[in-house]
Image (cartoon, rainbow, N blue to C red; front, side, top):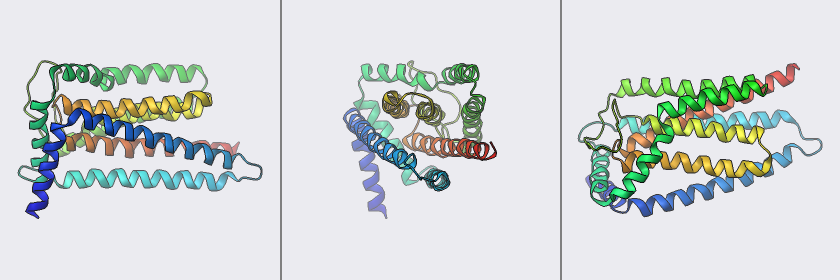
Length: 271
């Protein structure tokens, strides 16, 4: 058991020493997975719109996929939360990664990520929330506007609640690039990016012409991954904070999108 723990700490140390190349590789893999998922969605859409296809099984599949994603996100979050605490293997690995990043990341790289991290600031997401809600209402999409607002506002409330429950302190890494206050677990920037840009991707699939859908999905994945990584490069969060933010944000996003889909199906059935 101790050998496994030491290997995890060494892996975290190695990741911190090779942070920028590792970030690039993982981003490319994420984009490749997104492209593959897009191709699968297109094929599924073609099958649903073929003559004689029924809408009932499609709704059932969407709900099932949504529930699986919710459960997976909750399971990942619970696993991370269960291993918090001073002296645990997770805490040691978190600290090893943070220490390695302090030495390996160049100031110019930190400045780049300091600029990008503002894409998920509370102020940025608030402006996005209000602005897009107004646009959706103006386009006579009040249901989508409500779903958008509930997704972003609900995630903010959920994240603050979880922070208070776990009460984890941030890494002690003072610098002048960004101001980070409050508790650390889970990362609000990470969960906020997942929900905000994930919802934007969902709205793109619903509203935009097909030629814009894949670019929007790829841009959303890039932004989410980059914002999460920025919290590590700036050393204002531990790696487990970011992973937990991704997990909780993904679960909440899946819940919101599944709920919007069910309401849409119910209204179409009544209409």
